[in-house]
Amino acid sequence: MRILHLLLLTLFAPACVAAKHPQTGTVCEPAMLVMTYNIRLDTPVDGDNGWVHRKSFLTRQIITMRPQILCMQEVLPNQRADLEAALKGYDFVGAGRDDGKNTGEASPLAIERRAFKISSSGTFWLSPTPSVPSLGWDAAYKRVASWAHIIRRSDGAKLLAINTHWDHLGQLARKESGRQILEWIENNRSKNEHLILLGDFNADETEESVVQLSRAKDPQIALVNSRREASNSSDRPMASFNAFNTIPVTGKLIDHIFVNAGVHIQAHAVVAQHENGRVASDHFPVVALLNVPSPRRTSRCGGK
Image 1 (cartoon, rainbow, N blue to C red):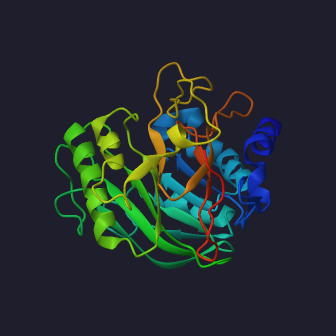
Image 2 (image 1 turned 90 degrees about the vertical axis):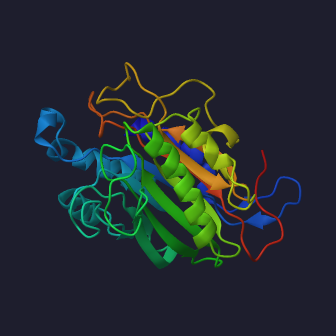
């Protein structure tokens, strides 16, 4: 875990203290860490990489990094129970994709309770019938987006956080999923509410399904890729899907974090950590350090 601690101290130390705007000197709210993590479903076919062998490492990663907003994918009911037991300071929201309740994989959000309160939440399906469990377009599986309207306790800042998991085979389904999410945001975003969209998109940042997220007609909901716009981020090729390899043989960055243009992105990282040669999932967690402007201040923090 020492490597992870050094990474956090190097990249994310600003999250521990209030920051100052570099030109005006205005004191802003401390930055917050957000994370998206495909934890890999619990399945016996994984053998030595099964959930029982890696859940302790995975939960320790999360506890060490302590994201204020945590979005996970492929979470089965027993895995959610394990995570809720380990992550005592979080409120979980998001339904199973099979029945809209507890059955099947879920893409839940875990919101740090001391940082935010949840005003409302829910799940919709990525399909032409989003209000009921359903398969969309050419997708191989039912896919969902779970969401939460949250309010920062320190200053009342409002955020709409969305967690999604797009289909791995259906190209049309991915493109339509992006279009649908933008339309849903347009219809459901509250006034002065900032946006955070996280998840496993099963596509790299060059695929049209992902690119379209930055092309919303309304500039208030056009999304910014946190890797591209971060003040501190790697320009080198990277992979978030690792297939349980400590150094991915093949793979792309398919797990992304997007925000609206009003949010400053201090840092972005793929946390490619292993413990004694074993990784915690077949995806690495992806994190971003964000400054969300306070409604009580006239200047936002940071600037690229």
